Image (tube, rainbow, N blue to C red; front, side):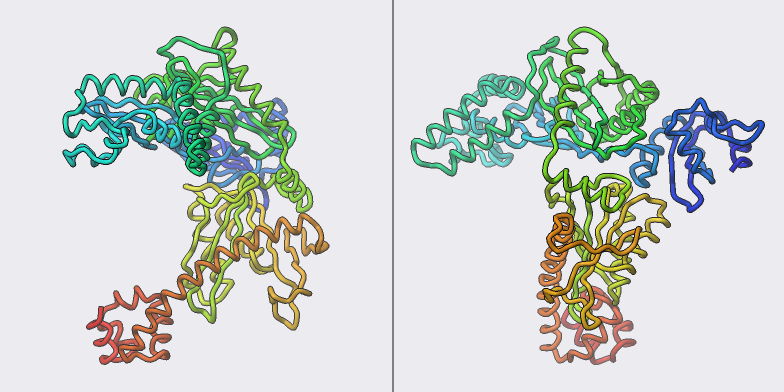
Length: 595
């Protein structure tokens, strides 16, 4: 490693430290690789870590035995690559924030006479477009409320029809399609609606009146739906009496590391009013680094497709790379963006408000979080498993082979992240390998969780650890399998115990242990999800087999074709020559004539 460090190039790049087993310890970036990496070390009288470094870095350097680096064209490229590698590979000594979702915005294109409000997560092309947001939650409820309270053009197709419809009859539209309202009068209505997006008092008041009216008519389900909309809109913002200049837009970020986990709070001020806010937790680390945290948070949040970005970003703490991050974002959005940490005045009060919310969120500890901490302690995990992915596969005599991945996130199922896999391997080990490999390939787009739970025993645990090591990803893994009775593992056998396979060895918990129940719950949800997919796929395959049978193709021939081609779709797409190689000219003709 010493020789590599002495011969580093002087250009910008990213460097990676590994330990003796090849485990990735740390990813960093540098404007000048040679100078940056050399600063970590003292070369005389012997090669040792520089004692002026932070305890976190010294601890990492003491473990490091190997250095690799990637040269890039600019410091900006190094910053982006570093951020990407940290998300994808989960290095031991880097902080890892949760990946930010793209939040929706409400927008309006006023280039036509009778515009509508719409939702978007991306930049919309047009010269006269105004964005409102982002809205981490409640955006859809807010949009629906606008159309409930104001008689705007309700559907995109309305104007094309040229004829007043039911919306006009029930007084939810003014029928501009029949010229029953002038563009100027409609524009006044749009102005009121735009104001309601930011100042929601009138909007909520109107919804409450409608809710009361519905309840009095005993239309309780509709009244309940209206109540839910009011709640969603009301919880959009952190309550604040701080008002700034009407034209001022600010994005505010505050990050705090606690004893058990860290939290990031984001608030969005538009026109001098806080219009929305959100928060997320991240895994606890004893080597918390504010610079890394803010760097990741800002680069992840402001993707290239962000519809709107404030020219001023406030952070609760100053951080080393703020100028470079500001420069990168300015280049990304082609406008000057500042990152500031105000010390006094109204902006400092906004920072204080965000930090108060950080402290309050860190005080909250749910029953689920307590369980996750207990799981981390029991298995000596590298982090508390706030986000867990559990895998299972399902088949019947090799037919309709599928896999399922379910996701547990912050104490609840994240069903939008569930994934199903159509598998082609013939044995269960190969099927698990196929499923895990495909998930690893997606780590760049959807970063790794805190923990993997696999349905299976030691072989699957070893497989996962090997695949993760090859990908240089740090991720804890637990496998759970039924104890084998009569050389078989039967889920239905009540006497069969669940055994846990970990890096520390085999572990057996008592049947009434809540930690075991938590793990079983993860495994059972994955099994349910995979089974549902398997049953659906098998029904489709049974139908296709039946159709081939009716055409005079026997079950043995169908199996032969499936063994060779893998799927019915591949059979249908195969050429006559390929089909003849597997069967004969007669079977090939039957299949091709009935495509």
